[in-house]
Image (cartoon, rainbow, N blue to C red; front, side):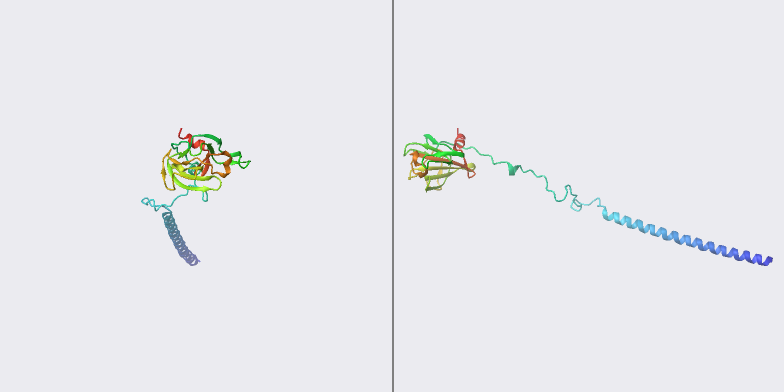
Amino acid sequence: MSDNKRSGRGMFGKGYYIALILCAAAIGISGYLYYRNANQNKESLREAEAQQTVPVNASEADIPAVATQPAGTKPNVSTAEETTPPVKRTLKTTAPVSGETVAGYAMDCLSYNETTRDWRTHNGVDIAAEAGTQVVAAADGVVYTTYADDVYGTTVVIRHDGGYTTKYSSLAEDLSVKPGDTVTMGQAIGCVGSTALLENALGDHVHFCVLYQDTEMDPAEFLSMGS
């Protein structure tokens, strides 16, 4: 009886220590695996952060640009150059001939035409003067062309600095200038005639019109620049 008790106690004690050792080994292995996995996770996290972090000594070309405006929107660029009309340059000017204005500029209203006996726009001014009176260049410029117009008669066209063009019509057929000639303000270009069929009821006169940037303007405004 006492031998069995001693034998049981001995077997119990030996099994107990074996179990204890196995538990300790299991705990140790689990701790090692946990520690190793934790270190691996930390290393992976460090690598990921390193890839996303811009080096301190990186040049501006290496740093990706950051958008300061939502995609698809246009930058706020001033359109002052597009909307501001061109500034008219002033010139020294003079009247092409001395005489009475018998028909005024009328592009924003209708003017009565005594020749055609109807109402229509009028792109210049008609200045009456005796036939043969000299007609002069209203400003310095270059003769662009001369021609015989079926409506306004013998015509001289002069281009000036600043985008201005002057036309002198109803002149006598004999002109004093030709295309390409450089003229100065007050230089004779021809003489008063009555070659404008559209305005022959006015008698001898000069039909004088002015364009700025190829658009008709009031000749009085052009001539006022020289006053």
